[in-house]
Amino acid sequence: MFSTFWHNLASASADIAPGPVGSDAIDGFVYLPAYILGTIGGGAALFGS
Image (tube, rainbow, N blue to C red):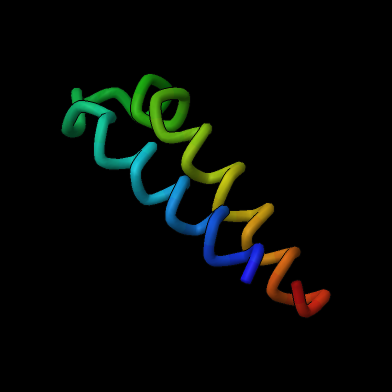
């Protein structure tokens, strides 16, 4: 499924991000790509692709 591709990509993106640095703003910025890819995967699952 197409959604699985996006979820796997989000997971891989989160894995390369460093651990928490203590600042919520920096942590949010670092994990933003994983969040966006996960959202795309959720949308694809919602529409059945």
